Length: 207
Image (spheres, rainbow, N blue to C red):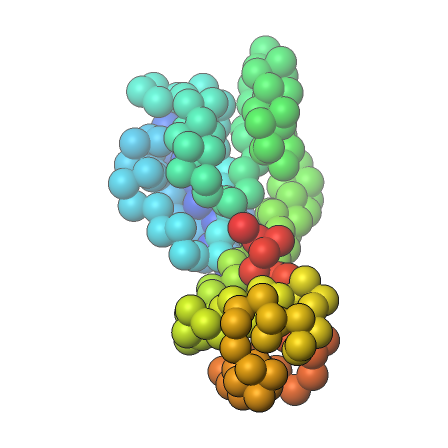
């Protein structure tokens, strides 16, 4: 087994030490990185939103419950995928968590295979969310290199306006528009107008 876990981080939040230990043993045995917390409060103080990770949390805990923890994560707009551990009487509560975006819930005692499948699904979702976040950050960094005038020209290119129309809109010459277009293409690393549109429209759909 490699020293660097390949599969991502699994946060476990449960006030039952035996449950934390068994989950840690099971998941580390499958090459996941596991971080255990005995309370929601401890988890929130140490949680790193930049990490590709998922969360397994008990619904009923002393202090802040799993439901309240989910609400806190929603307030922070965290994309962290969550699965809840429930006792038999907690299924209606678990259904509530899924309506708020939890991926699933598992009843105690849970089957190892079921849990491992859920963890893999959650981490797939986390990787996808992380990748979208990185793409958006990269687009923002490129667009921030444009001057105000270049941004105005780009806006009109995206709206499908021709160089002459852009020149009329902005009160500048067609040659100046062409120079701005060339600068925009270079700054955004775009080889074609299609590349340019993908970058600009991607930024708009995010917003």
